[in-house]
Image (cartoon, rainbow over all chains, first blue to last red; front, side, top):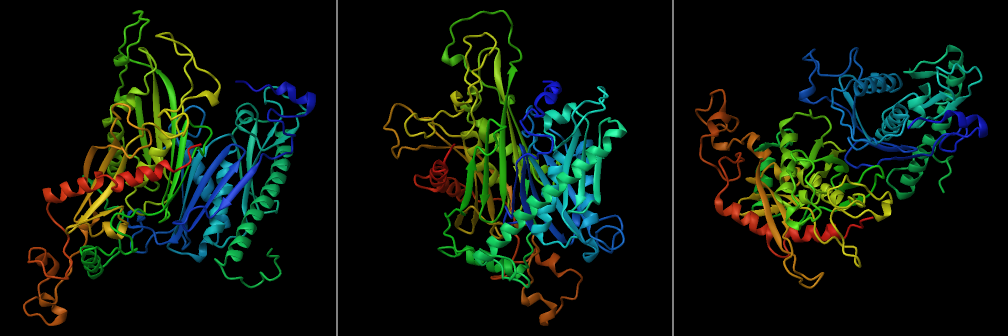
Length: 273
Length: 357
């Protein structure tokens, strides 16, 4: 079904009733699974992903790298971040099965792996592997962004030291490339329908800074519009960071209240209600 | 036979011998203090994904977790000649084919074409299809049918043999599956009601109690150590199993109109598969009598273990079980599963208790 972009200019409302700078509902949980070192569940609108982190641990015998002798791990004595993305057959509207060798899935994996490897303190874990497995349960646009956010949360849960959250968000533009509309407004957090029609990019930043960790743009867009889209995307990332940080803090507070963890140093100042 | 060797348990021969002997006591003492027929507690929920026809999620107490999503598509039945008009549809004309169901299992960190995964999906599919009534439910009319895609995801790393978990999750997902209500009649092209609230369940429910009238099968894992039969083994227990069986159990079709909700659940054995337990690849222990470290004479050769494998069994020294299961043990395993008030009965009762949407 083609997206009716002409209606936007009338009321400045998008197909799902949001304004240009509004995120969809973001709902996240951490520590959803007892058997893993870290786990999370994230919903961005109707996009639902689950993440399970194991490690840092010695890589299993199967994954022995060609180097041999010195065990696994990435080059230069840092931990290897191994990401596997499983897109469930039932996740999209029409059932479509993606094999493990699917090129799109491979690209998602590499992007996430590189982004996280830059933020995680992998040099603390030489000869080890951090294996992150992501499961896509439902897709409605902004898939890469949701995967990055879920992976970040799970890494926080696993207690792997990292510089800051890697938070991601998508941004787009209100009119298509072909329309060549100079007055097009930027849009935040696109859903599947918008993503199909409009130029869009995924941007991930390092926490609340303006440092961009990932920038993926797979559609044609005029260079003049790019700056606006990027600015909106980065501000969206800051909003996402707030939300994720709140989730982590709530869980921490909950765990202290339940007595699962000891109140650590510096927690005294934190309000535990 | 499936191999479960991918889940190596790091136990030394002495620990294995200890586990084996405590499990072969009467009554057996299990590492987690359960009775032989006690299932591990689990958390289950259904209808978690609105984008599917039916979905379920189960978390076992050991932390393993699975999600199953069911999606249905309308498909034209192959090999049916066009133009034959027939207004009357007889009940016995309904037929089903096994290719109307497609089942895939995803296990993280395991290749798609891994033998173990293929065996798992074959085993789960076999249980479903051996109950011929299941594919009949997918029949729409002579020319059309539903194609059902079952996607089974193991979310957690495979800690223990995931067969019971996947089977129970599939069971719940199928119970929660709804297909749009058919509006068209006869052999015309199917036309459906777009009101999801009116969609009937694949497994019809009782109007008043909301309980399903028929239920999909479940596959349970049973193992034997010595003369003891142990249900729902944890991975440490599986590491010392003499025999491990996957037993698929379905509910027999109710004949006649016996009183509803009575104790009359009739169980039917659908299939039995032997599972190759990981105990077969465990290293054997070395008795003191032949251990050079304990001053045994004449044991200076390179591999004492290799020689040990051929020697007599010594009490308290671990030896990997070899050979097949005794027919008597097999019969007991199956009987114990099926008996009234037995484990299969209990599991089906417990699953009935899960609130289905």
